[in-house]
Amino acid sequence: MGSRFPSHQLSNGLYVSGRPEQPKEKTPTMSSVAMPYTGGDIKRSGELGKMFDIPMDGSRSRKSGPINNAPTRTGSFGGATSHSGQLNSVSRGSVSAGGVPGSTSLKKTNSGPLNKHGEPLKKSSGPQGGGTAISRQNSGPIPPVLPTTGLITSGPITSGPLNSSGAPRKASGPLESTGSMKMHSASMINNQAVTHLSQDDEYSFRKSFPKPILWAIILLFVMGFIAGGFILGAVRNPILLVVVVVLFAAVATVFTWNTCWGRRAITGFIASYPDAELRTAKDGQFVKVSGVVTCGNVPLESSFQKVPRCVYTSTSLYEYRGWDSKAANPTHRRFTWGLRTLERHVVDFYISDFQSGLRALVKTGYGARVTPYVDESVVVDINPSNRDMSPEFVRWLGERNLSSDDRVMRLKEGYIKEGSTVSVMGVVQRNENVLMIVPPPEPFSTGCQWSKCILPASLEGIVLRCEDTSKIDVIPV
Image (cartoon, rainbow, N blue to C red; front, side, top):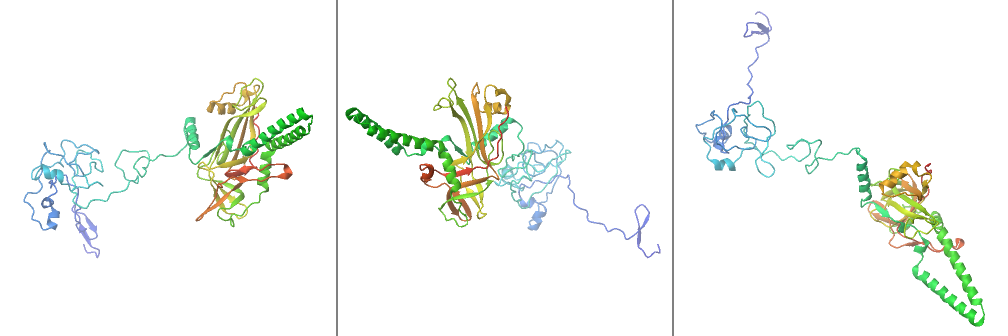
């Protein structure tokens, strides 16, 4: 053709423009021709032997039928049987055992990849289908052992990624039954990070007053009454007996006053105690800090109302004992309210100081000594006439295996949730960049409050005071 554009004729007779396509080197394809089994002998490794200038044997690969009574080789060799699939009986990838030095070298040598223990792999990395096995030569370097990241696996199919130990990772999600919720709550309560408080941790004037001084006062009054009675009978002079009676009445009045108003006096003492600034507080100094609460690693949930993200929870059930009703506890007296059950827990939390803005970790968890002064509100009042009108309360009793019978009961609940304002009294401890408030090594005394006729009281551990708890309305029943 007389055009300046080159053209060429195709094999079918057509002329097309352009230069004829240069023949490209044919890319090697996977052949179904059986490869000779070298048994690890470099002389039988084909091109690998030429690299080392080793004379090759005259016998090259030859086709053969299926192997009969020949030991199978595991690994990545095409003729091996693995867990990924079974070869059929007409596999052309099988090779004869001819030319193999012996069964000993067959077992000891392996040119395929090894696992991390240096042993040949027992599973292939892909399926084998169509009845044709693909032969491979594995005479290259051993591939590195990959960590169990969950991306490449050769084990059974799981429903999710694997953890560092190779086990299926447990996925978090909503619980499917109330039984799981109970197990979750029980696991939280049994956590070592949670401090369980009892009624003994509350303030009581009778418990805080020194026992030796109490018994000494009782002994003096007994001796005074005996002496006054003796003098009155011997000389008819009642002066000593009258003095002893007056002193006894005064002491009894003071003890009764402190028993009834001692808790209110201590909360007033805490409120009047000056707040310290964490920025200038020294290590080991006893301070009072007021601020906003932030939850730590283990938040709590209130028992009855299910208030989430709390650092302190308290739920108490009281019963009133009449003349012929049952006692709530062994020390329950008639015509009084007695405690039947108490659930009180506290964990570590953070407090942001109002004075300096610094945040400190309050160590109230892990069994620390804590004295709480947290206001509680009445949630439920139950009597025989309205017992069936509070299903939530009946459910709460059933979860704890408590019977209601015909008792008059009262449920109180208090908590410190995230965002509440609290006052904390404890010892400052600085550990590098961490600022903590820990329990003091010895009890702290409030001293005498003469204007209020209040005797000294001892405060043990960290003191918690919260008076801004949410106003809890009594559930109508």
